[in-house]
Length: 137
Ligand code: AMP
Ligand code: ZN
Image (cartoon, rainbow, N blue to C red; front, side, top):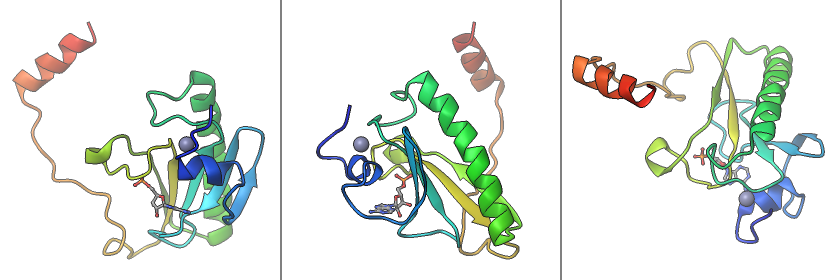
């Protein structure tokens, strides 16, 4: 299903022009318009899913295989020193466009001041550990 109000539906299906790096029946891979680093790309499924929870298993599997391929090609081509694969779900997690997408962010030595994907390390408390383990019982 495609969502008429979704900009990534329009981009993924070629209704809005973008810089396309790769396209197949299920996905379009584009350059991010506000790149965190040189080569920052987005993997967009052509079918609308707001987030990872809505993404069909088959598409999730295909998306990661494609991410792997694109990551290798970007890293080799740009001679990056590393690469982050990032995928945000929900506003608190930093999602701003509510159509599932994966970020491929090539990393270069010394880019830590402009690309920040870090967090303060907390402590795994016994209470939290038990609560979480309970969910998986
Ligand atoms: P997120 O914060 O994970 O939802 O990521 C949304 C990403 O989409 C951001 O990195 C934006 O720079 C990027 N973005 C938004 N609109 C466009 C667009 N029209 N073309 C390319 N990238 C876009
Ligand atoms: Zn969409």
